[in-house]
Amino acid sequence: MSLRRQNPWMLKNISARALFVGGMVILPAYLLQESLMIRVGQVIVFGWLTTVAGKKLLWPYFITIVIAITGFHVLVPTGAVLFEVGTFPVTAGGLRNGVFKALTIIGMVFLSLVSVRADLRIPGTVGAIAGKLFWSFEQIMERRDRVKVSAPLRTADEMLLELYESLVSMGDAVADTVSRKATAQRTTVGAIVVICGVVGAQWALLLVSLP
Image 1 (spheres, rainbow, N blue to C red):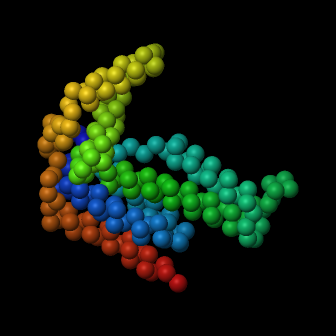
Image 2 (spheres, rainbow, N blue to C red):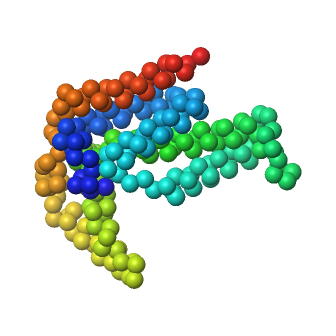
Image 3 (cartoon, rainbow, N blue to C red):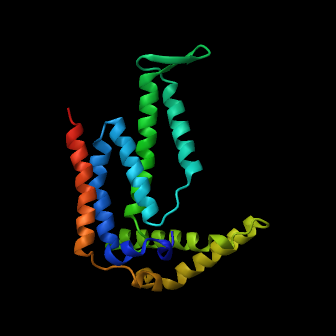
């Protein structure tokens, strides 16, 4: 997703590193959560934060994930029988497990969309590679309008070739692109309060749900 299309307040007040750290701190609390009701709420909140960040949600993709994962788990009957499709029993345990795991994956996608921004820079060789990956994805989203329905393969190939030539010519200077200079290098106090509030809420929900 292009940085220019993302939420201007977030770009000006929250650094890419702060977003990333916040997402990483939330992740354990999210994965350890076992309440289906809380999981539904988390996915709704993460989806909302994704739209606030200016990123588009691909609903057909997420609906397909829910249907596919839930369907596979329903094939393994567990717990009380809710109803039958022909001679096949649909059980509460299979349905619950499928929905929970599908929502967990979707929530992780939402969390990654919010916490990983194109200007994120991680030290070291791995960080340099990751930086180029983020930049490449940003540029693909920026140039996707160049892919024409009348000639999708040719126009997509031209776009990717142009992107590859840009990567080769820039070397290690990805972090210095013009689009990244306007992003916050440090996180403001107000933004820190917002991040801590979101992070604290996820850990509080985990503690409340523990038996």
